[in-house]
Amino acid sequence: MQDEEVRLTRFIESIVGGTLVSLSRQARWRKSWFATVERNGETLPIYVRGDKSLDAEPFPGLRREADILQLLEANGIPAPHVYGYCEDPMAIVMDLARGDRDVGKAASDAERQAVAEQYIAVLATMHSLDPALFAAKGIAIPRTPEDIVLAYIHPNQRLYDRTKRSPEPMIEFALRWLRRNVPQGRTRAAFIHCDAGQFLFEEGRLTAVYDFEASHIGDPLADLAALRLREGFEPIGADISHLLRHYATLTGEAIDSYALSYHTAAFALTSVMSLAGLLREPDKHTLQMEYLVWDLMTRRATLWAIAECMGITLQASPPKDIDSSRDGVVIDVLQQVLARLDVQSDFDKFQLQSAQQLSEWLRSLESGASIAGQRDLVRVADILGHRPRNWQEADAELERFVMAAGPDDDALLLRYFADQLEERIALALPVRHRLEGYALAPVVL
Image 1 (cartoon, rainbow, N blue to C red):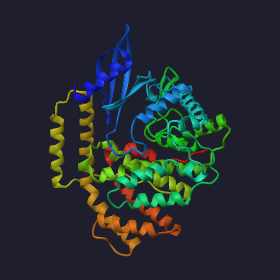
Image 2: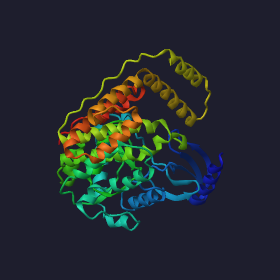
Image 3: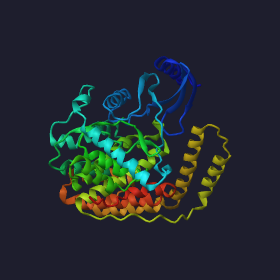
Image 4: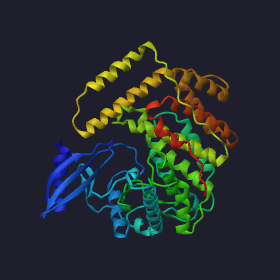
């Protein structure tokens, strides 16, 4: 065991009250472990949720999430039972909930839809909880309609301001647009799952909801928007339009289509904001391929959702043909090196798979990134009136333009940022399938 796992073992045994018989790192980008504890003749499956170890959270620290999970369990929500919070290493020790996340494993389409509808019912129940329960744990309750709508933007703004390392013209454009175009009449503040759509099920029954790290008090429509985005890469079991209508039926609250699109843009943008500083300084952080994928996914969703609000139609880019240069042999050799690596643990296998996908991504970038960059400088020149020397200079000048621009420039800037992003997506061939759902399909309410 690593030193931190030795410390974790001691904590698990002290808080659960038994003997730890197994501890294995989960094969994913974030630190998490599966554990087994023997106590009084019974075997307890345990899940340990570790910290991200990055300054990328608007509500840092897992203790807050542990408090939320305990509040939810105490109020009838099927959240995992928390045994305690470990300070070193930072982690939540909880029951390993039964069930599976992959709705593709359900027995039928009818079962998938039934499970998804059960999650909507749980979501509606969470939205009905008294916000004062969470205020007692230090979670802020927004008071004005504007603050209710911007309840997740505000803390992410502080995170973004603290971690920003270079010009970010697209983020600044989206932030200014969101603050100028807040939907009216959103007066109900409720507990928000935030990263909605995360649940487990077993034999047609929802068994647990999880991941409340970003939960807060805000507009309930924000959860429905987040659910819409999750469907883009992790199917939730039923058509999103059906689930939105099901929520409206359960709650008696009509869905405001403009506010839904607005919250879709706002939620997606918060992910872009949280990653902006990290991706500008990759040498100073332990990063994963997932962050690169999320950056493209959520940038696209932000722009497409703003386009929905503005009544503008955007077009997705077709994939680019790969025409490698003679120096593409460097990537060939890299892929051979990766193929020769002998990895044993599930986590190392996960990391190797990521490295192999990154090498394929590099191949497509090597094929077309230079040409795409030159086309982008031509588009920037149409806005600025002159052509910057490189992308860094273009970003700096374009950010200054954005900060001085008014509503009359919104359509021009939206189309520019969308065209720029679609060029990048066209070259992201190994992960392109994960980005498709973020070219948002219309919702029918």
